Image (cartoon, rainbow, N blue to C red):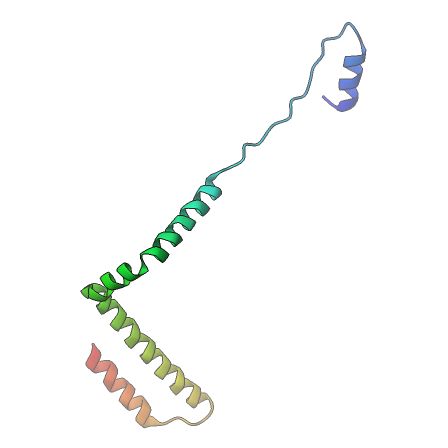
Length: 107
């Protein structure tokens, strides 16, 4: 029912009054709860970071992951440097040979 029809039906005394009810959208509190949990987690990590780091330093699996990540970063940096030198025309076959040998011994 349009506003014009609503006004007409209200102004006429013998007609029934019909009102259009607005839909009220409920506000979602999911984002607020997520933000609150994130803040609490950040505070807990800040307060206990010494204990967490101590645990991780003594954890063998963490050390293995850390060492593997460092090796991967070093190999990636070396490969990047070799490619950068190749693109600039300063490629050295010795660098490629050494890099290939290191990759074969690690696997």
